[in-house]
Image 1 (tube, helix red, strand yellow):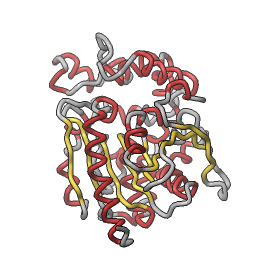
Image 2 (cartoon, one colour):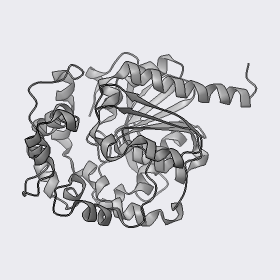
Image 3 (cartoon, rainbow, N blue to C red):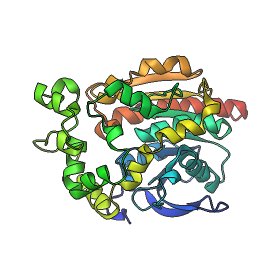
Length: 343
């Protein structure tokens, strides 16, 4: 579906096919900016779109980079395969490698947010020869678990509600999130706060094993935050009203399959240059503190925590995020120029 009426100046859209030589190719709807320079691939999370990078695309292009952001498989204008297994980590990382091939490049720098972070971290392990650098946003690098992830989650949360476990049963969360996409996106974008900002009742409701779903536990916001306009929210609502949420939810249904597929990555560290950006008010960082990743990143170039920003950090604080990203990207570009002996 076209986003042309919403796009910043200089941002274009098109559809490309990746995996054309496989038995199950997919079409990816892309937003792109810049005509030359090092290739940057931006990978969104759940429930987001390429549109989530609207503030980064023109800024990175203006700084001399060629930037592409796909609606990842299952989202927006891209293919939405029916099989749950089509959303495992092999397919998700393969799509991004396929984009690098589409642009005729050997390598790219990959920047991911939320679920997109998990994909680009794994891409750095699975295809390090295709990665010039990797940046995770909101979700730090997590090494391979000692047992299937959902087993760990069930042991940790017991009878309490945990959204990832709730997402596992096909059809259940799909129906709840899809019953009112406007409510879903409004509450997820504007109602998720730092735990310290929630009332004791709201905090208790998030984990109570009372049979309720996911969205109904999130407080209804009093209004939209200043970083999100009604038109921007409506773009999300329009797209998810059209596509539903099953594609994105299927990513969660592959946690254990991904674990099985990556046995060879047990103990593996990220060897390519890495970077991390998060928001100080992001509840995800309470569950997964960024410092826990440091021992697993052998060439870490820094961690930037944006004060006051929450989970949607690249949308909430674009100027700070763009400055941090360009600091990392410019390091890589300068190093590459020295290797090639370019003055």
